[in-house]
Picture 1 (tube, one colour):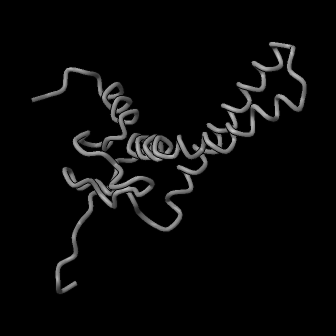
Picture 2: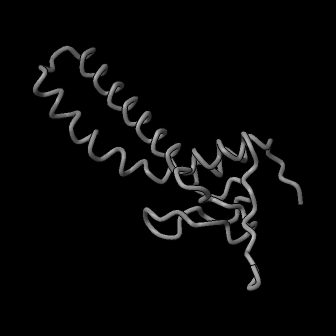
Length: 129
């Protein structure tokens, strides 16, 4: 049965719900902070060569910086905050946000990679290989 949603909407929903960007049937994490090697349903490969995860780290870093900037500007616009209070507000954001957003940064990275170039399939090697 074909999906009734446009492909980009389906990909966005899979990204937000942390599901496989290819099939959407399984989640991309096997345990907290541990990405599956591949999708058990469609065999899409999630972890590839050394350094593939750098994109997820970059997404997490940039998103954290944007969150800190947004809160900082809200504090500045409110006008009644001094520098010490602003730093006190921003410190927990800097420490907690990257940990909370970790899973979604991986999901965004996999969805972007799937959008640019399809995720490759995991192929099990035979005994003779």
